[in-house]
Amino acid sequence: MTSFKHLFGELFKIKSKKLLHFSISQLVMAVILAGLITFKAVTVATVANPLFNIFRSFLANLARTITWTGLFIVLISLVLIAYDTEKINRSQTWRLIPIDNNTIYLSNLVSSLIAIVILVLLEFFGAIAPMLLHEALTGQGVLVSEFFSDMGKIGFLKWLQIIVALFLLLLAIFLIISFLNFSSYTIVDFLPHFSGKLTLMVVRLVIILLICWLGVTGANTFWPVLKLPAELITVGAVNLNLLSSIGILAILDLFTGMLDIFLMNNTFETEPNK
Image (cartoon, rainbow, N blue to C red; front, side, top):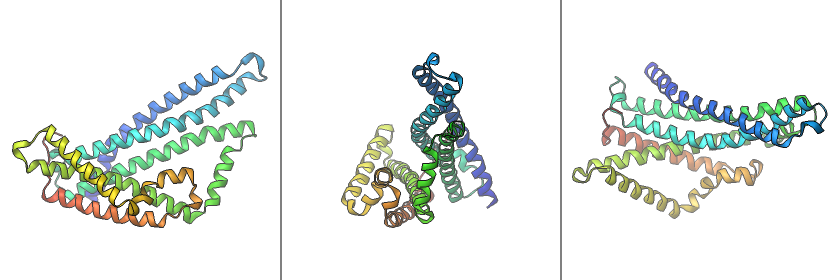
């Protein structure tokens, strides 16, 4: 447990440092965009209390810009963290640590998941904070209060299902990417006369097509999972039955995780100086 905590801490520092840079860059960009939108829309000479109105408008625009830029930041961060995760998985340098492969794999995976979850929470509170300040200054806004009121209507158990389903979906993304990484390198290792980046790309393309084919053939089974993010936005959380999606994701995560650990311990060869 001590080894896991220490390794998790080191890996989390590496990933969170990169996410911190992204968050700071996003905040600067959001402030600039909100400022440009505000000063373009407000005519100082025609309003009473111009500074107060400008600041109030700026807060509303800041909440919007943080929300929209946050979506892109989370997606970009997910790609980069997944890349760093697989880079560590195939690194011989990290294998030099006197810790078993399973601990390295789990520490790497958990640190990536926690980093993304923290980023999502920061984006959420970063968008809510300007809205709360805006309502406190004006006493007229109802957006935040309505938002939390709608959250309360959903109910604790439903929110728990949503959080579990989204977390399992995030876990599935990382596990499937790891499976693609492990399996493609394993196949290339058995093709010494055809090894190279081009061969690796072809093998990965074949595996991706195979995964897509399995997804299409099992559409009736996986469709509740595939449409989950869209339905949370369009249908609403209250009307969703998430238990089937949670069950499918749990089985998928367990099966894919076991495959990843097997490939990592038995067939996957790491690369030097990564």
